[in-house]
Image (cartoon, rainbow over all chains, first blue to last red; front, side, top):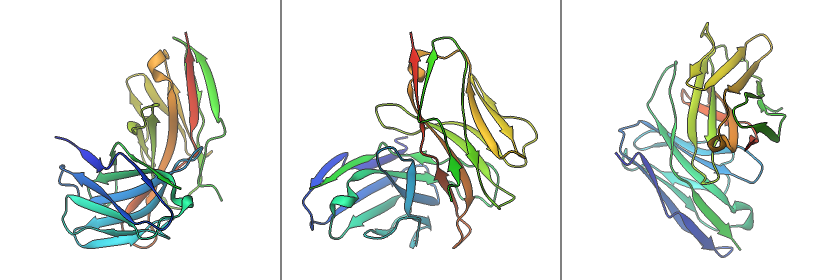
Length: 115
Length: 118
């Protein structure tokens, strides 16, 4: 099991360029999430998905779009990158649950720099 | 308002001693969960321990225990017998319902950088 993988690991963009970050999980999880982590801060939720074909906004969605065409993949897009989007991006996945314990499994992160 | 507060930006502990990392939270959801994650310098997020709001006993996982005081809304992480490999950033997180649906999201604190001294 690879768990949660993210592609690429590092990327440098110029302001205005676009890119897509790929997250893949092989645990058959229903839920997937994209977070960003800025220096000195915890992770903040950008978008999430509760199943194939469904996405929803999290805490900081502006400037990002997502798609979940396949259950195992969750894509994060930046249409026109800005320096404020310089961050480390984490993808996570989990089982669906109506309550009780569930653990989010995190990918290794993607370090994005926008100049 | 901050939902998760970690008031210790940095902590030092001597190897083999115990250390407590503080976490307070705020929620009106009666059903919530509290998590601690470890983030070493390599950057990955490692799950350590979980406490559910209805759990009667404090959670323990090996050298990690969670001191859960529901009335005070605190969920402190206790690491016993610290090891050099425990040096890392530690995040407290709370699971709560995302208002727009049934999904649960994790809200993270700002973290505590723990350094274990030899």
